[in-house]
Amino acid sequence: MASATVIRRLKVARRAALRLSAQLKPLLLSRLGATIIMTNLVALSVVIGGMFAITENRRGLVDAKVDSLSAQAEIIANIITETAVYGDAPGPEMDRDAAREVLRRLSGLYVPDETRALLHAPGPVRIADSDLIAGDVDQAELPPITDQSETPLSRVQGFTRGAMEQIGQIILSPQDRAALDRTLADEVREAFQTGEAQSGVRRDPDGGRVVSVTIPIQLIQAVVGTVTYESYDLDALIAQERAAILPYVLVAATVSLVMALVLTVQIAWPVRRLAEAAREVRLAGGRRVPLPDMKGRRDEIGDMGRAFSQMTNALYDRLDAIEAFAADVSHEIKNPLTSIRSAAEILPLAKDDAKRARLIDVIQHDVKRLDRLITDISNASRLDAELAREDLETIDLVVLLNDIASLQNDPDADAPRVSVSHVTERHWVRGHEHPLSRVFINLVENAVTFSPSQSVVKIAIDRGPGQTHQVRVEDEGPGIPEDNREAIFDRFYTQRPKGAAFGAHSGLGLAIARQIVTAHGGQIEASNRLDDEGSVLGACFTVTLPAYIR
Image (cartoon, rainbow, N blue to C red):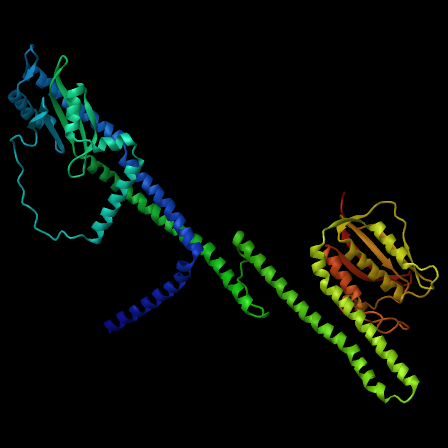
């Protein structure tokens, strides 16, 4: 029973580990996540290296050690000078046996553990060593022989120690590096030659650092010997400081790694999800793909996600519009083609000239209708590219509307007359002159089509709400059915008044006008003009465009 429970728990743990690895796999393969982690670790390594390097090069620690050794060495040197140095001419000499006895007696008082005292006579010749003077010897059993092969921990420690040594070497000045390379013999020799105390940090034959001070023993100006004090505990002190710093380093490394993981989860994973969604959109072939929901984020990633979603939805809407446009175009082109084919099939069977002439008129009319339809379709399809390619201009709506009215009016014809209300001020807008001209030309032509003969199509321009201009095109026609006030802006809407020539219009004029006005940040609306009794006096199209303040 117990074994079954253990096996079940192991299976649960294994499934949890697999889920965790599956979740971490995108993180490990994410370049952005790896960059975040490496950036944090590199910054942390610089901090750690600087901390260890500062520990390596602690001037205060070395200076304190030098001062302590100098004081001890001067005590011994002064006692030896008083008790073991004698003679005047031809020069003073040092009694070596007396000097050794002084060092032996004082070694217990002034030569503590991890410290060594040396005496040198001219030559220089070493005449005494505190480590070799007979005295009490501590006895202890040797540790058992163990395998001295390298372990992973020892290799890591050796690598770390070597790295810290390299960092220390890099930040040391050339003088400090030269001081480390000098020997005890060099230090003693300089003390004999200069008669001045020598101190510093050097390396012993085993590679350890030694703080040493050499004090000359001299009477007046004659140097008869030297006292050298060496301390071997500098590495131990540095190791203690490293051990004290290590917990803080581990905490800093843990915090840095956790923050790197948090940043990766907050940045790399959402970006990866967006990239995968973009890939699915590309391979979907126009099929709508659900996008990552980032509405709750209030940062740059959320902005990018929302912008990506809006862009994709706009792309889908454009694809839907293209499909609908293609379907409408095929339907509209099919009607005249069907009429032409029917007339062409019947034409050889016509018996008299009147029937053949009527069929030929049908064919010619449908050909003209087809040509007009294709021209308007081409203009509509090029409109977006034309608006994006042309530069914006400053346009005076008053001048533009007067030019359109003068072109539409024919004094010899019985058609409705176009009139622009008198305006004393200028109405400036920023936009594309040719497309805006097409908007008002389409509206005027549409109004003329619906207006009776000898009527007036009025164009009025006023200030709109806020910083806008409003242009109204009013006719005296039958008005617009309430149910069709929005439908008239649909493509290929061709409901015409009685008596209008069939096929004379493609039904794209108002659709193109709304597309252009919307691209300029404006609105176009259709309504009816009513009298006091509520009767329809005609239609009114209102175009609202943002004003440009010069």
